[in-house]
Length: 380
Image (cartoon, rainbow, N blue to C red; front, side):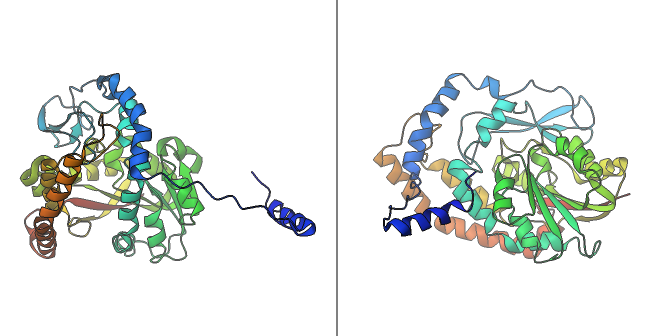
């Protein structure tokens, strides 16, 4: 690391000799076309080895309750990035748990996450998360009736720390830390959004931070975990007695999940691995030594179901956007065709967005049209 006094010393020396050197400028970031072209050879090499290595063995029993009574819930493709592959979700007849089967292997997780939250996807997803301050403040405020002034808070699956930054408006005296398996937590620390950013596995980190935190949040984190139950045990370990755990996950019992089928955005294949019914999660928390204080459905609902489903239809009709997992860049006709279809779909997208908001204001909870739930639990 360069010492902080070096630039001043160099400046003084330059002044003494009355010479100046041109300042070096950071290299400009490549545009998307260049970035795609740079990545294409690596993706094509990965795909040449086949897709089989991206999946583990198929399970014959439920990972939540152990029952062998499984039924296929749906089959789908990657509707967002259109990376190759087909993905299956099974539902346990006994407990209702829904899970990806077969589940992505370590190689598969790396392949399908690559350029989703970072790289080619960093600008779009970063902008989306950064623009949701109001939602983040509401999430933080849901704890207020149960804990007035927590001293320390760990946000697990923090991404770039935008929740922690917004939550500080609600709890200005709380020290917020973040954990993520990507470099997002380190970026959040450098940006000042968190006091400390941990990179890595929460299950592996938990013994070293046992009993340190007043609050741990897992907002849309558990559905990404290869094994959710060790994550819950890690939260119990890292919390002090009397501390609080906030969990928010997609609701697999949502009526939208049935109505919209594979175009229901929270299925988010292949990134989402587990979908836990609220009753299952409540019982497991109780077994681990938590007391569930609140279960919320209307509050965490994100009114985006119809808009997303409409976009999936339009996107499927349009020629594919250039991406390095496609063998070649689309021609001019395809690029123009995509632009035309996207433009023609704008009225339908606007109508869907309006309908989403109208549903959220009234019938969402009454008719089971909320898409997520939140549990607030106290460590006993």
